[in-house]
Image 1 (spheres, rainbow, N blue to C red):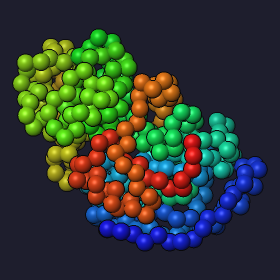
Image 2: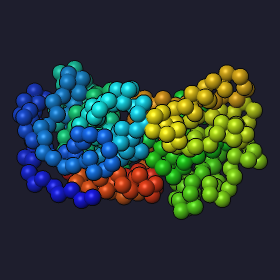
Image 3: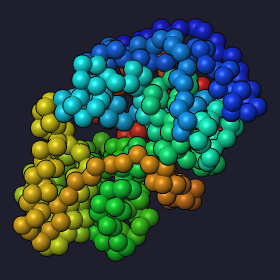
Image 4: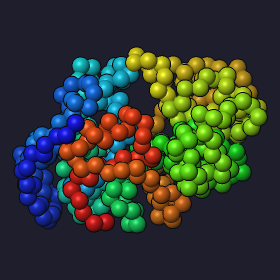
Length: 357
């Protein structure tokens, strides 16, 4: 699906102080992808809308690039339906502009913001990243690592934050452990492989045959093709299994764990349109009460402290964002289609307003 862009130039907005910038931008227009109903990628369209107004604890960002992950598809489709009950919007999306991962430059700050000022290059999690300007809460934002391009920074927040929470907070990873990452070629998986290596673990990644070389190139010690290898037959035991978007039963996963190993279920695409993978996660918590192994789920959080924890790994080159391809703003529906087809290696970046690092 091709979307014809609305050609309306956005004027340059020199920044002098937060108050003057906020009043100047109010009521002006920007280009954005909007969604007024749940459905397939044809519900997404490019439109001209008002710039978002910021709350006291938010900043306004001139968006250079955004990131796209599997969660973007779920919000577009409104599935699993449990999401709607959880506050994403029952009949239609609560946030009309989709997209979470964002990177750009601060142009205005709310009255309670203390960590940022206009001119700062930042990355974080916004409410509506697929737009020329986005509002972002201060506590979901961090300064952009200087060595990353805006496109690289934009694909970090959701997936990188999920990976570090899964390994460090839920998985309690330790140096010397044997770690299995199921779904190693995806957005979260590519970060998880690199972070686990940086934490000193021996890492085995699981992916399709077409992506084995990529997973090996980002540092996995061993790579298994799930279409050929039975990686849960119990012949190899792991101290920590990070299951990202898998559909394996708990019994099979437990077979590959050491007697006191930890399983962290990050997601899952099975379970139907009602609950998705939540059912398997809840069963894991119940089973964990009766066995020596630790079976848990990750309820990922959106917080700047994780972005700040990731920054040293990004700055040192121990973790490098993997970008499969980049789409311009008007081709977001094409990016969604590519993502839904399961073809992406790592993340998809959306180029909003091109700029050098």
